[in-house]
Amino acid sequence: MAVFTAVTLDDLTQWMKQFPLGQAVALKGIASGIENSNFFLTTQRGAERAEYVLTVFENLDFDQLPFYLQLMRHLAERGIPVPAPVPNAVGDLVVPLHGKPAAIVSKLEGSSQMDPQPVHCAEVGTMLARMHLAASDFPMQQPNLRGLAWWQATTPLVLPYLTPANACFLHDEVTFQTEFAASPVYAQLPRGPVHADLFRNNVMFVGEKLTGCFDFYFAGVDTWLFDLAVTVNDWCIDLDSGELDEARVNALLASYRAVRPFTDAEDIAWQPMLRAAALRFWLSRLYDFYVPREAEMLTPHDPTHFERILRERIATPAPRLANFE
Ligand SMILES: Nc1ncnc2c1ncn2[C@@H]1O[C@H](COP(=O)(O)OP(=O)(O)O)[C@@H](O)[C@H]1O
Ligand SMILES: N[C@@H](CCOP(=O)(O)O)C(=O)O
Image (cartoon, rainbow, N blue to C red; front, side, top):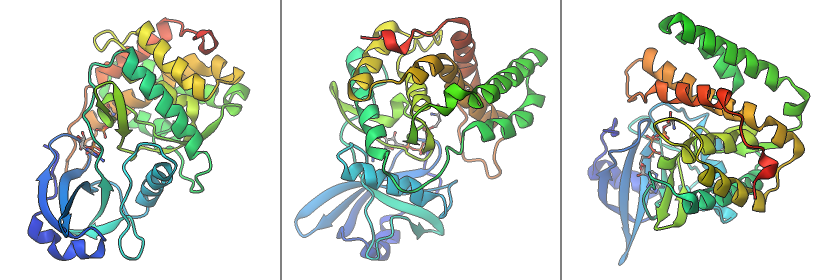
C-alpha cells in the first residue's frame, strides 16, 4: 500500500482554490509505488472533467523538489511525454498539504509493460535519447544524489550486514568505480540532467506505443551513459538470471543511437557503466533493507537481484556500443 498520508475530498475543498482546475470531484489512492502518497484526482470546471495525479511527498523536502518538477515542466514543454506539473495561482509547483510538500501533475494514459519485447525497448530508447537532448539546456543544477559520493558514503553503513565475501565484493566494486570516475575516459562522457530510474514500472504504454514516463524523483545531473545503463539493466534482461537479452539490448541501443549517436568514450565506458548502474541499485536496495529509515514507510526491494546483475556484468563482456545496428 502506498498511501501514507490520508487525503480526503473535504481536505481539498479549500486547497484546490489555488489551482486553475475547478473543483476536486473524485480522489482515489494509488496502491503501487513505494516512496510517496499518490492519488488519482478528478477535477471539474463547468461541464469539463479532467484527470490528474496528486502526490504528497513523504521523503523529499521543499528545497529538493523544484529541480524535479521544473525539469518535468521543461521536458513537457519540449514535447517529451512526461507528466506536466500544474502551477498554482502564484506559479508554485510544490505547495504544502497536511504539512508536507505536494504537487498536481497531468495523468499519463496507459499502463506499465512488465514483460517488454524489443518493440517496447525500441520505444524506450527513442524517448530516452530525446529526453537527454531536450534536457541539455535545463538551467537548474542538482547532482545525481544517488551517485558516486552516495555510494562511497553508504557502503560503510551496509558492510556490517554482509557476509565477508560480499563485503569484499562490494568494497572492491566501489574502489573500481572510484577509479573509473577519475579516468580521462569518464571525463569525456557527455552529461546533463538524467532520469536515473527509468525502470519498467516508470513508463506507460498503450499497446506497443509509449505514452510517457514518470517518477523523476531520482533525477539529477549525471552522464547520459549512466542513465542508459540503468535503463538497459532493467528493460533488457532476463529477470531470473540478470543476463542481457540481445534482441532487446539491440532494439533499445539502435533506437537511442538513431536519435543521439554514441561517442568513442561512451563505447569504451559501456561495460564499467553497466556495472556502475547495477552497483547503484544493489547499494540502495541493501541500504533500504538493512538500514530502514525512522518512521519506516518504504517497502524494500530484493537486493540480491542487483547483486546478481552486477556479478553478471563483471563476468560477461558487454557488447560494444559501436557494433549495434
Ligand atoms: N503522471 C502519472 N500518470 C499516470 N499514473 C501515474 C502518474 N504518476 C504516478 N502514477 C501511478 O502511480 C503509481 C505510483 O507512482 P510512483 O511514482 O512509482 O510512486 P512512488 O514515487 O511512491 O514510487 C505508478 O505505478 C502509476 O500507476
Ligand atoms: N527502481 C528502484 C526503486 C525506486 O522505486 P520507484 O517505485 O520509485 O521507481 C529499484 O528497483 O530499486
